[in-house]
Amino acid sequence: MLRFDHFNFNVLDLEKSISFYQDALGLQIVREHVAEDQSFKLVYLGVSETSFQLELTWLRDRTEPYNLGECEFHLAFVTDDYDSIYAKHKEMGCICYENPAMGIYFISDPDGYWIEIVPART
Image (cartoon, rainbow, N blue to C red; front, side):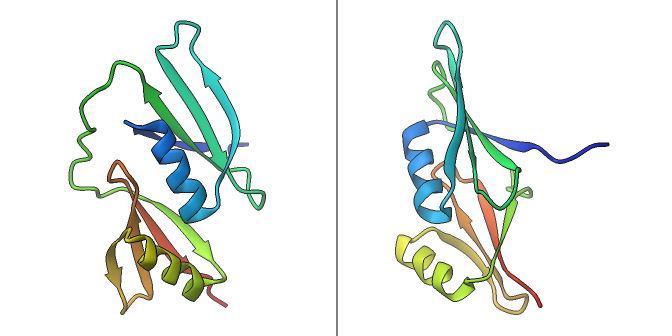
């Protein structure tokens, strides 16, 4: 048997990224790992409703922003409180693309990764 476990984003400013994911999506730190030589740190974020986690990887010696190409990949979150979370993201100024015809939008994190927000469908 296989199951999805986590997905990784490499980040330039770990504290800024953690704060963004906590504020924008309510993710919480699940676990952390620091290399013995302090060269990298992994922080896993999640929510109680699923075991899937977002791994943020910080590399000590990295100084340049990551090249994300054309941003054709993304994470997606489903919400049963679409209007409220949309208003929050609008206030935060992190909405980077809206598709009203599909009823979805995307937010961008501090490193430029896109996260899709989808309303729960009944």
